[in-house]
Amino acid sequence: MSKSLQAIRGMNDILPEQTPLWRYFEGTVARLLDNYGYKQIRMPIVEFTELFKRSIGEVTDIVEKEMYTFEDRNGDSLTLRPEGTAACVRAVLEHGITGGGQVQKLWYIGPMFRHERPQKGRYRQFHQIGLEVFNLDGPDIDAELIIMTWRLWGELGIRDAVKLELNSLGTSESRGHYREALVEYLSAHHDKLDEDSQRRLKTNPLRVLDTKNADTQAVLVDAPKMADYLDDESRAHFEGLKARLDAVGIPYVLNPKLVRGLDYYSKTVFEWVTDKLGAQGTVCAGGRYDGLVEQMGGKPTPGVGFAMGIERLVLMLETLEQIPQEIARQVDVYLCAFGEEAELAGLALAERVRDELPNLRLQVNAGAGSFKSQFKKADKSGALYALILGDDEMAQQVVGFKPLRGQGEQQSIAWDALAAHLATCVVQG
Ligand code: HAM
Image 1: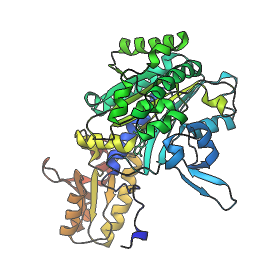
Image 2: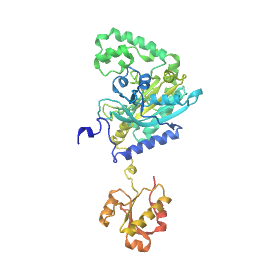
Image 3: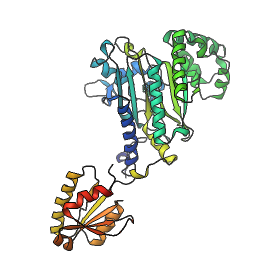
Image 4: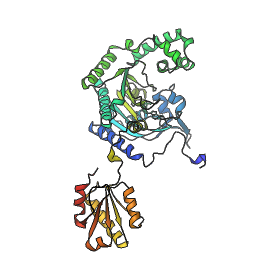
């Protein structure tokens, strides 16, 4: 196939054999969020470029080199969203739904786009489930977000494989003081810093803490610590969060170097990381952004949220073999009909059964075929039972009911009794 007709590098098809696991994951998260009282919001995939520059920060990797930006036919600069927080803030402001201190607990799901170097767990189109909470400024809601994810890891069976890293970036004032101290310290060691960190020292000094360069890391050992610069309010907030995590029994690691790659954070930041996926080990990340709404033209409105990478979590379920058996089976019952008359009766019968058992996964054979070929298809479908309609069954107004997975003999069931019979032997999802 010519290259121009292939999918773009880093942008993947999710094939039918993969979608059951995606849907299981997405369904589990959606149910959990519903149960905690979060409501879904859907934002466009394309926004004005300015939105991301203003919120994520001009001197972040995302804005500097990872955005898919283009001019549309009106000459407007548009960008495929690299994340969801900016658009969510725009949406709540535009619709006035956080005005007057209204609390909003929102979640979203969908594709995000970043022009990063593709590798396992890192793609150019990837998918996030994210959530944002507005107008709650206490550590209780930060804790709720983390508790919820902890529950999710438990439900998914991956709790032992993830670790929570936690830090506080303080209020903008305390961060300002810290930034000054850090710049002073790093400037005194300027020559020992790698090139990228020298540049960041001028543009975004906190990001130097995030460096992978060993020499710069060595310089950082004695650098001033954010924890020593937290003001009383930030300190109390952080203590409040830790006390709540302790109360629920959620383990965490304090990581003073955790600064995040987006500029809008204040106070709490956190990441759930795993060592099961290689280099791309952060499966869920977020924090508080109390200044962002105001920065984007709204009234001061506290905010906090996180996003999880669906590809990474699906990979984890596969790697840890935490795939529930029942999701592999997508068909409960497969109806085979032989001859035109049986086909017509079969269609009508299938609809009657579906009326009574709306959750039954009933597949009706299409494309006719011999007894052998229909049976082969029934078996391949993964169904538990085959229903058989041939001349004999037609004459007696019954259907052959044949277990396909070795649970007993074939029997005849009257058409009128079929739905009731199926209800007793198929657990419906
Ligand atoms: P982020 O850390 O940039 O934060 O992304 C969140 C998660 O998305 C990451 O932890 C990772 O699981 C996944 N992810 C990011 N980039 C990629 C990629 N190239 N390929 C695959 N997965 C990826 C945010 O996006 C913030 N908006 C989170 C947030 C919400 N903070 C507050 N509210």
